[in-house]
Amino acid sequence: MKTKIYILLLVMGAFLFCNTISLYAQNEIRVGLKGGISAYKGNIDFSGFEMNTEYNNGILAGLFVNFAIHHFVSLQPELLYVQKNTGDTNGLLNDSDTVESAFAYIDLPVLLKLKIPVNQAFSPFLTAGPYIGYLLEAEDTINGVTEDVSEFMKDINFGLLFGAGVALGRFHLEARYDLGVSNTIDEDSIFNGSNGGADFLDDVSANAKLRGFQFSAGISF
Image 1: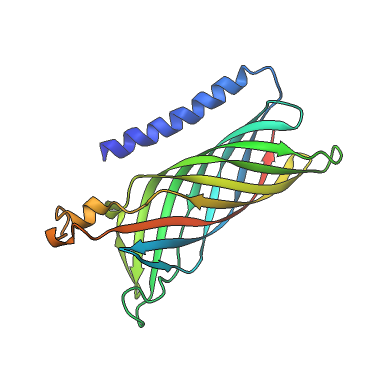
Image 2: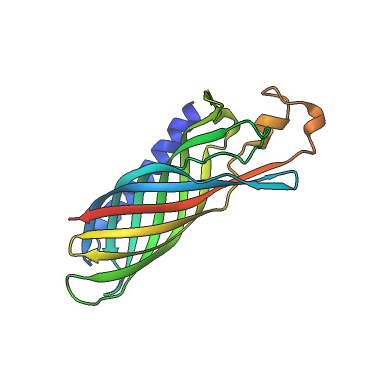
């Protein structure tokens, strides 16, 4: 528990550090708020047997700081709460079972933003960059019964974000794709026997990546 608190404080500290540095920059600084919806699915590889879950919806909300590097290029760190829920695991247990998962993360993306100026009131843009995420909660619901599975999940997740949107004055709309690249499953917790696993499962592997879309609206100040 203490480790989780320390990591969360570190993530928040990193964001505040970026914010402080940006305040001393010579270029234009903007801060803002954003919120929207998410749609994620899981890509699972269980000892070579691959399967995908269905998409499931969630919400996202947070804040961002944007500071200019050039007239059309800026750097944008963000601090986001993102639900990365996944749908039915396509009969992972058996054909009659329904499995849904709910994951909540604090994500810290650092994005490069490229503006495509059309006029002062309308500017399309592209974004891309890495993020690191910290797991807040993880639950599986099987046939209506919900269970906490956070002990079997890694605390840290990371990936890449690719987005496109349009700025309308101080307001913006954006769609992003989240390419999760890290394994979210803590294999040691499942297979090494410390949490009910068995030693004969040492050669079994489990790899799950969370990937999906984010749709948001925001305002800058």
